[in-house]
Amino acid sequence: MKKLMISTAAVAMMAGMAMAQDVVRLGTEGAYPPWNFINDAGEVDGFERDLGDELCMRAELNCEWVTSDWDSIIPNLVSGNYDAIIAGMSITDERDEVIDFTQNYTPPDPSAYLGMSDDVDVANGVIAAQTGTIHAGYVAETGATLVEFATPDETIAAVRNGEADAVLADKSYLAAIAENDRDLRFVAEEVPLGGGVGIGVRESDAELRQTFDAAIQSMKDDGSLNDLIEKWDVSSTF
Image (tube, rainbow, N blue to C red; front, side):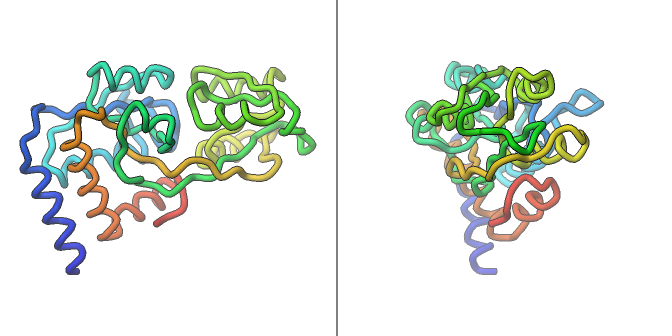
């Protein structure tokens, strides 16, 4: 209880700091279920919608959602099109050279290969991955041939049409696809990548990063973050 009271006080303190913007714009892709997607009503939905709304409520921030293509999601943040990225983005040293991250709001999610045959040679075959992801970076460092696509859906289509032998992506994203398509299955071993998923902010927005950090910590302390992770089944819990 004492720990919860301290973290709650920290959220209140950070929210009370001078924030330059009246509205905090949250950038997401809207194409990576169950992390984030566009529902039938045309609204951002998923684990990160629930998480972002809760963080903003705890931090007393007025937030709105903005969608962006993945390959421009960091440039759009840096150029000021929105104020934070909450889009299943793994914390990596390379990205941290361009933007800042909060603490992780999920532990590292295991990455997995999805293919149409159990005997796929992931070490030497043709592997699809989304452009600008840790999965594309990993495949590029192996002996496999990397084929990159702008969207997650295109990576799956490449496997279905024979353009790629398998796709490498977060297991939580691939799980529902494998469950609903009898022609696709997990192949090879899982691959641990990244340092967990965090909120990305501009390097100049230290106060906003600290505000979100405090709100994330408060959710970790009271168990509500684990509840959301389990609800959406996006990763292991803390």
